[in-house]
Length: 348
Ligand code: IPM
Ligand code: MG
Image (cartoon, rainbow, N blue to C red; front, top):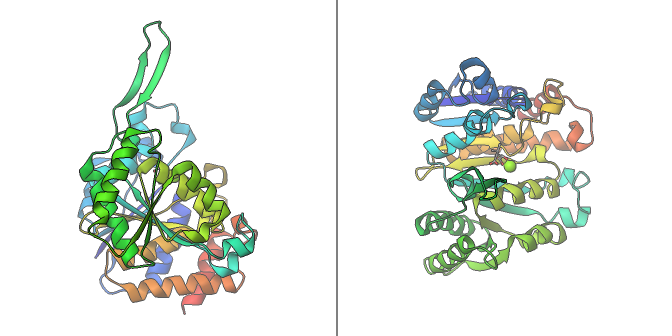
């Protein structure tokens, strides 16, 4: 089993190193790693954020463990050369349309949540974010208005097949959990969302056991802090899912805690923390590696068929937290390496 390791930029390499140490400690037979450049790091070395070799490795590998991309040095480049294009390119080229972002609060972290502990401890949800469409991948550009003003534009669209396949992932996920699905849209304003809602309602007939609700995205943002315990599974589009998952992460303690899986129709996947490259703290050993370590656990569970090993990692993370391991984002002073050490100690 070949894992493509794509550390990327900023804190990406630091957190990937810790995840790899944890995977190594499991001594899984036949697990091999191959590393490649991606993002700003790749752009500086090769002139492109997603070099052909990196894409070929990602296609060849059984799963991909990804750090983060984003580098302020590259913000002035043309858009197609910016680091973020690497992750968008991988998602599109590999048809990774289903992004699973679980948000659960480790009870030990109730105090780290931005919410009152009694509200925070209720959080146990998974956000299913569509990842191959929406305003992210529509026609975009800069143009001039008739009176010569600069104008930027990005087209938002979804077709019914795109909505149906992600809706099914939402319903299937709900069937395996609490059988409650909340579809989030902005159907009071957007035609894209009206189609989204219509297709989700049609798809519901295939899953009569699931209780389906609909929520406008602005209300959902509010409900996530008011009463996050009401959510079991949320299914939403690319842009809304990007925003709501960052918000859910702070409710669940820290953005440094949330893993994600991006899957194609055959469960091949890319696994990454939902946080970004955090250039402000890169190289200082301040990053929390737990989101990446938990992403490695998701990889073992979803793409490699090794749920027992995934359970071991998740249990070790809980044990490390219970033993007091806290990086700065969790209000402590453990370094990235010390957080990794704490998980390793809890594994054995
Ligand atoms: C995420 C990130 C990416 C996104 C960026 C880096 C392009 O914010 O994975 O949530 O917007 O999808
Ligand atoms: Mg994001």
